[in-house]
View: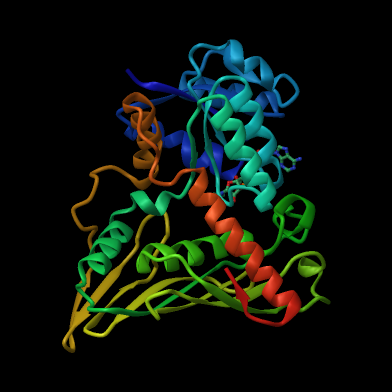
Length: 337
Ligand code: NAD
């Protein structure tokens, strides 16, 4: 059977990116919508065949507990609302898919994990790159030793944030600046390419505080992670340039992706002993889009009683490092993890 998703938040990601993906799914379908905008919700409901009775507002969201067609609540809201809606969804007896960043603090992530455990419900974070063919192939190559012993990873992610009024630039809603948004991809890449957990972080920030976009949150932040094997990752994020890159250097070769984590059009290079190969078409992967792969993964985990590969604990690990990065910037020193 296909499990039913309720999409909470009909913004850019929920409405324009996730909803069109259910046609590519084998185990998932959309069965409810949660929005503050009735007209928008009615339009989406008609397009995706969601019954009108399964449209909720934020105020009556908790009524979703009485809807047997909803198995999973997918939280596509501003970052500061992730914890509240995840916990309420768990209390309503639903499994949860929560967008990245998991929340805006370690304490919130821990509360989300506790709530889902208490309700015996699964919690997964929307880390779509774990279902993207190029990133999966890069992880496989790194793990197989194709580049030799891993010595160094670089990852930069950013886009030009233009609208100074966007919630992403408000500390209370976003929890931080580029690190909370695109930096999560750089941090994730450092962890999934090395396959290790960092033991120390050193970070610095560069933000023009006179720029009206950056009164509350950082623009550019750069951090170095040290890993137990001796590998180092140099990571960066910013809101003032477009960049999307992952590079892994081993003592025998390299694996490089640019763009690395886009919705489509990613590209990959591998090199060994001075010879280089460009991989321009997706390597044989899961055979469905990264979004459908992600949606179906949680459904399959629920049906088979497995833990998602990117569970709440995975989001919590990242948030612990995020807090250490900000602390390193504030205190101007290396922070041990
Ligand atoms: P968005 O601003 O386009 O949409 C946010 C939605 O939340 C809107 O429908 C808005 O009306 C609603 N909302 C409800 N209460 C709100 C409030 N108090 N203030 C502001 N908006 C409110 O944002 P988005 O780009 O869709 O991002 C939503 C989440 O998805 C974020 O956590 C973001 O990090 C994540 N995201 C993930 C990816 C990915 O590739 N995994 C891509 C984009 C966004």
